[in-house]
Amino acid sequence: MRLSRFFLPVLKEAPSDIEIVSHRLMVRAGMIRQEAAGIYAWLPLGLIVLKKIEQIVREEMVRAGAIECLMPTLQLADLWRESGRYDDYGQEMLRITDRHERELLYGPTNEEMITEIFRAYVKSYKALPLNLFHIQWKFRDERRPRFGVMRGREFLMKDAYSFDVDEASARKAYNRMFVAYLNLFARMGLKAVPMRADTGPIGGDLSHEFIILADTGESQVFCHKDLIEMGAPGPDVDWDDLQGAVDRRTALYAATEEMHDETRFTAEVPEASRLSARGIEVGHIFYFGDKYSRPMKANITGPDGVDRPAQMGSYGVGVSRLVAGIIEASHDDSGIVWPDSVAPFGVALINLRPGDEACDAACEQAYAALAKAGKDPLYDDTDERPGGKFAKADLIGAPWQLVIGPKGLAEGAVELKRRATGEKQSVPLDAALTQLCG
Ligand code: ATP
Ligand code: MG
Image (cartoon, rainbow, N blue to C red; front, side, top):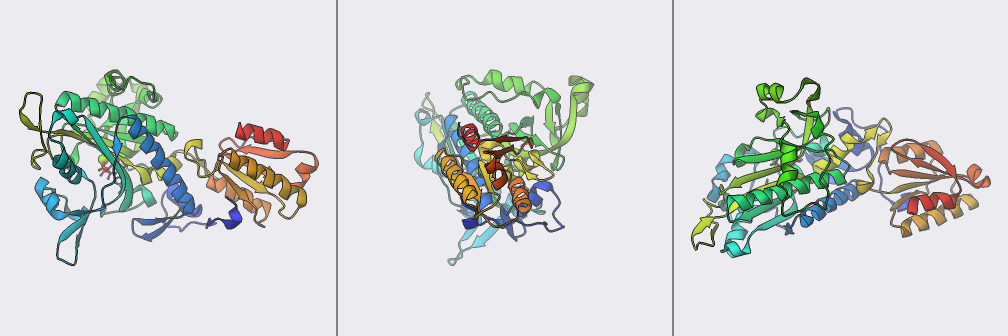
């Protein structure tokens, strides 16, 4: 992408009422624009990152055996009356009436709808296990939308729903999501810790929230320090036997505020290993048995010929919240520092003197080579002064900067900077391109 033809409305200052760094940087870098409280337009730079995160989530869901579908944002109120949640959900639910006076709602989650789809088609245990997911916008009329896309009212969520014939098999489905979550957060450069969680209004008896640590997090969390560095199992695990991988991570104490038990915490965790910190919930998995399948009569016939409600779980990832979460975890005073896997551009290519023949030629050569190698270069070919170009490149956080100017070129050199460390090398253009393109 040539910056002169891109839409990147960068701001020098963010509005002073912005409270957290990720929100400030997203606004300054021209990633989002607030259209109403908790409702944002995704500008081109923000959308590229959102899509990259979405794609990582999708790939890890598919790897774990889940199948993608897409349910609508609008749902019938009657569907939610079947589960009893239409009245329970309260003011967070945005209720809408259409021209025929039919009551609709903008979905805050999809347990009812997926259960309705399931019961229409699946009657036998032979079709199970089944895990369906979608990545769709949700609306929750949050009492206090804040921190930008971190707590929006409209937000993008990946939600998966598993169906099994019995509890043993449902727990296997839960374990697959547990491991898939560890893997997908790790791919985004995040250290997400699964913590025992309250099952809240959705109910059930087994639930973990995946938390990343950040001072600006909204929840207080307590855990054994070793969990932070434990790492993800990776894609090459035995997907049919994940109990060991799950047990290793659930054996150590980790709980959110609602589930915290100070007596157990002090008894189970040596003082030096106790961590009490703020965290951001980026994912949440539940096993809730027949909470929806029973009232909604989503029954399946088991191997014994007897009908029973399907055993279900649901699994959410805050896709749009992750954009902010990753920035909270990875930024410095100059701006965002994207992990390579979600960076909107792989390389910021800076022409220090557009119009200079040698600079233009070298930049065009670099731009073509980087584009060909799939490095998504952003070529700053504008007339802005060098200081402004550097500041912009730092702000938007491409992992590499390739700086080409007349002085360097005269000596046969360009400058290659690693955004994360600030480390700079002065090397011939060919060497820089070999390093970047591999
Ligand atoms: P929270 O406790 O933060 O309000 P929740 O527990 O109500 O979240 P879930 O129903 O578990 O949310 O939704 C799954 C995921 O969707 C959460 O883990 C979170 O990452 C994301 N999410 C939930 N609410 C919001 C929101 N208002 N804005 C952005 N992302 C959200
Ligand atoms: Mg939750």
